Length: 313
Ligand code: UDP
Image (cartoon, rainbow, N blue to C red; front, side, top):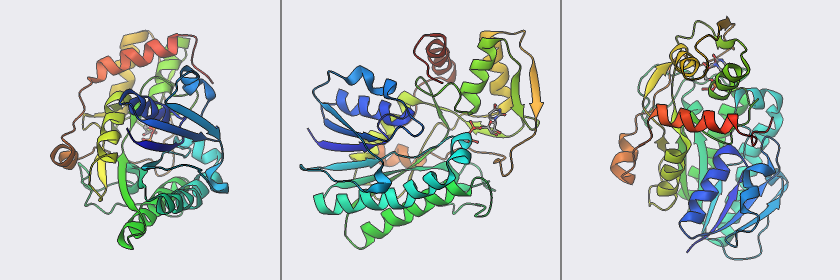
């Protein structure tokens, strides 16, 4: 049993990751400031002896009294709509927040894991994207606050490892979906599902020919856990290579919920990547991991969630 601190523990990915670690019998300490997350995501753990929670903004520093074996930094606004609203918080958590986590990892001799992103590849010219691709990122645009913060966090993790101050792991997370996403977080899957459920038009940006590859949350957190406990110190893509156009996923969701729904085309946000598909051969080889959930089954679970009473705004 390991002692594990998880920042961003009440977020969509963070809360599922906490569940995964608890299922495996670890002691988990969650931290979150609820900037884009909700206590409802961890309320099922209220009576869980393996879980303790502290409300805290990690950009203000982070202290911990006991021993720690691992620190997983999943704290950050992560949907484009969220980081447009909180650009400074996003930049600070990826830089100062990650720095505080790494200093704590150094003090505790803990392994540090940074949740990074496919956004480090920017609007990629190669497909699928292997970890060796350096990316095509605009440092002076609306997505820069997120992309550059995550790239900075990777550079910090690299530096602490190279200097032998702290061991580190880097997960490059691709598009993920599932229960506990916020209804209004602005991402494609929750938008399309909730629009179809409400009988509103489904909003496809641009002509919908841009591609994404969607990974179901259960697969994602399993990959994250495998990476955390592995000896792999270089970045690893975690995602599902099942690439499709945005129009395609909009149509699939429409068919499932309300085939009568209208699809409307709205302007494409600036710097919206044209294509995105992970090369996951490294995760396969080094972690023995690959996603198992079919898109269809993941969508059914997510639709069921949004139909229930639980979803928050
Ligand atoms: N998108 C869309 N309609 C929406 C929300 C998103 O067409 O209501 C598009 C968005 O422009 C992007 C893709 O869907 O091309 C995925 O967007 P999302 O916000 O889910 O994540 P991203 O991959 O851009 O970080």
